[in-house]
Image 1 (tube, one colour):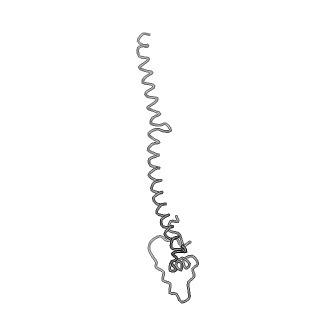
Image 2 (cartoon, helix red, strand yellow; image 1 turned 45 degrees about the vertical axis):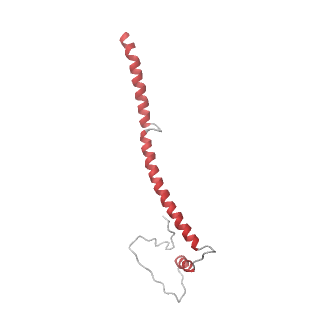
Image 3 (tube, helix red, strand yellow; image 1 turned 180 degrees about the vertical axis):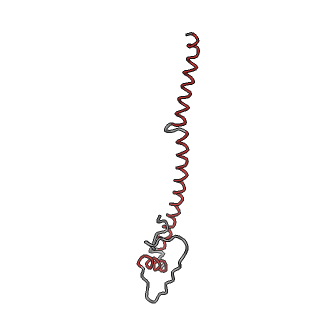
Length: 113
């Protein structure tokens, strides 16, 4: 009995250490979830970068259509792409590329996914 009283604090201490170590690894804020959160952070930062490029592209295109800086060539190009119409005197050349194109919407926006 005396021997048991001698080892009981050590056993309880080891059990407490094991309990906290287990939850530090597998708990809601544990090391396993830290790795998941870091992977999600990388994916979201890549998406943020892509969306920032998209926004810059949209802002450039919108600036071409503003009242102060109306680019008539760009306006005509967009009208042709969206409406499939051109002046009968115009010569329209189409370039067939090997890249993936969206045939359902030829007037697709630069970041349409």
